[in-house]
Image 1 (tube, rainbow, N blue to C red):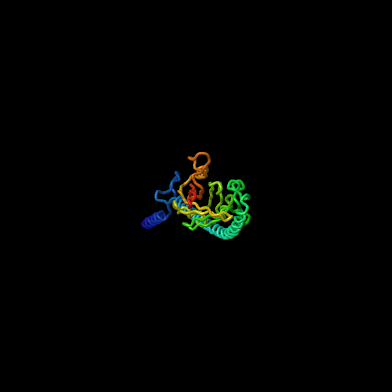
Image 2 (image 1 turned 45 degrees about the vertical axis):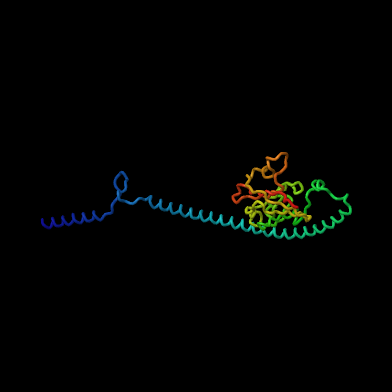
Length: 267
């Protein structure tokens, strides 16, 4: 009897110990997890957040590299434009000097034969003379001493030619309505933003004639205001208030910076 009870007690004790050591199982027919059990979705969320952060970092780095690349490209383009302008200015200056000497000789001949001299109206009809460099036609050289600008000017303009030098946008120095446009490269027309009214501006034709202008005012013009750029809308007919206009884009490109010039009163 005593032996039976001891064995019984031992079996019950072993059973309780075995029960205590068994792992917890998921509860019941409802299929619910224990209240203190970990969530299976948490690691997935963390993984997604890590992936999202990595993608954002990569995209940010790509945007930074793209920005740096654009800056470098613009700087190289400006440097090349400056080299082209310097080279063409040197070539054109030599041509102008040769043409000046020829003009002096022609002037001596014209003094002997005055009836054969072309008047101003005849020259207007014939148009401005040009010289060719690398397949491009140039009408002369622009100089603004106060901002160290000395650049050749092409006869016609397009975006490809503007990368080489400033270009005639419209008008003529014969009719006192010449408009010259140029990129805002630091080697082209960017220095014009520092020009003040009263500054001297010179245009030297390919024939060696020097035209002297004075800056009358500077202003910003909307990109779409073409008529306003070319002429003063307040004036009657199609006459301009200015004899020469130089313009370039502002840094943001939203407006045009225009330098208006008039003929200097020379004694």
